[in-house]
Length: 503
Ligand code: BGP
Image (cartoon, rainbow, N blue to C red; front, side, top):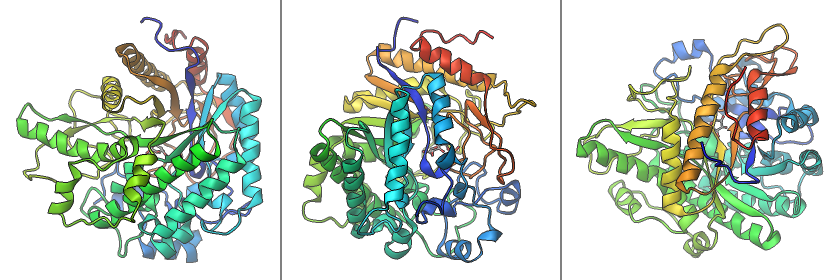
């Protein structure tokens, strides 16, 4: 391969507060929606078999949340515990530095700064914690990239205001953003607004703080499929909140840049039938919609028909459209895990599938243990599509492989499967750069084993650093280096030139 990666390319890893910090009731932190994400055990998979085993089950109903508050001991809620990063951040960041990280993507827990989300004054202990974390990064020459909200809306806002359904939550978010922008001015150069903003379609609770009445519906791929009116209203409000955050960022710290974050769902047609290709177009629209607004600053033409035919009315405030136009992002970030297969549904304008994993299998691809198709070439296609559409610099804010690891007595894991995944994806990212796509960095999802977002499992490991903890929090929490740790170190040291797995 030619020398592809530009000088100063930001290699690193990505995490989220709710999946690593733990300490959910320490340092004055308030409750967040992520504290109500139950562990999906094999037993739950069997007894609630109506759910697709690969679809996240952490959408909570009002009843579930109430019971989790009243009887927490009945539930396994691993995100409350995380991997203890709140106390081990120094050790963990030192390990990232040893791998040569240039960037560490992490998120701020909003309810650590404003316990209820909308308090008048911030919690100094929470602010001080992130000061320490960012200082530690800089000590090692690592640039923090900070997500403002990664699936952890403060619970109070979700319960009292219906999360982002309400403009009150938008105001609270903007106040929070202003507070952290002022506090960390000069310390944080890269900000992201909402993690995987399109996730509202499949995970309305975690993504937008929406709580629906009644138990999740059985016999569907998605516990809360439908509710389009609420979901698209909430996401409108989030997009306004995101635009206001960008505007604030430019006012408060002109040196800093703010990006967005899309879970990019690249779709293939199942056959050469034009109808299947049409389905790809429809489903693509439900993915591009979010970035079209955030990058181009206006609602795309194609949503009108969908809204009209489904009687969806978006309530807007007077200057919303202007705000969206002014608050376009400086760069675009995506998570990329897999590709999808589309078959015509027989509808003129179908509803979004709202699925996490394609229900139609691609026979040309292998799959991870969680049924996620592995598609490195799809990564190159995705990157080209995004750049073609927006012409904005791209940062890959997540890419990774969740797998079951077997650690030896010393905590060492021979994870050639992870190395292979990484190698093939980095190669294709290199091809995309050679194609002319402007990519300025790559963050491996979960450089250290952490709690899964979708199923709250610990055994679904992404890390290059092993953490001795099981699904129930048993273990020493000791950190050890896996084989992939040394591989990624070599990749970073050679700025992506040496991708051979030599040992
Ligand atoms: C993305 C999320 C992450 C992360 C990742 C892997 O959707 O932004 O938080 O966890 O997916 O998903 P999972 O943890 O469910 O395997």
